[in-house]
Length: 215
Ligand code: GRF
Image 1 (cartoon, rainbow, N blue to C red):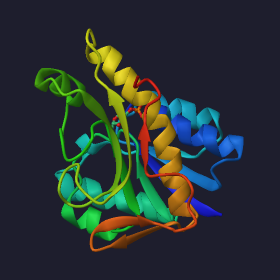
Image 2: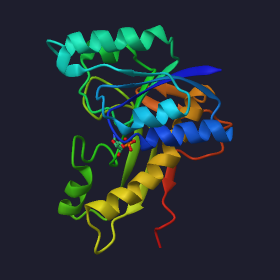
Image 3: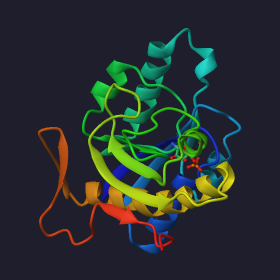
């Protein structure tokens, strides 16, 4: 079975969705470790309760980004993962780190990329008045919140939405598309063609999910 390492910094609800899919038998993976750069990440507790090995690596204890990333990569590589899954890991990664995991490092971002890279995506979507928002799972490149898109989910922005209601609507979709993307990866159904992700021809599920809330 393919091995994955999950990196988190906080709540860990996407990580939980991956654990739940694994436990439900719909995601055939071995989650070999969860690593956080924050000791107080709630997700660390959740992972430990599920019997998953956890590690905390304090980024503030390192002289710079490269030094932290080198230690992080060393820790990850001890677990020999096939895939490294960023699930709310709030660190900008150095080019060297990203290159080391090229083609086996994925991220989930709470917007329809390339719109709204960076932070505060839901607030910015509301300020821009967009009518469709969502989330994106993508391979990671050295550019922040950029890279070949694996799957996206779209949700409507409704009159009266605030940051909390919109982020909750998006998060429900994140918990569906992230396990789906990881499933495709571990089943060997993703390939890159000229910098774009192509799904295997026998794959029935589409790489876009339009939230049922759209009326
Ligand atoms: C999610 O919105 C994810 O898209 C973003 O950070 C948030 C992490 O939430 N990268 P959680 O820790 O998975 O609950």
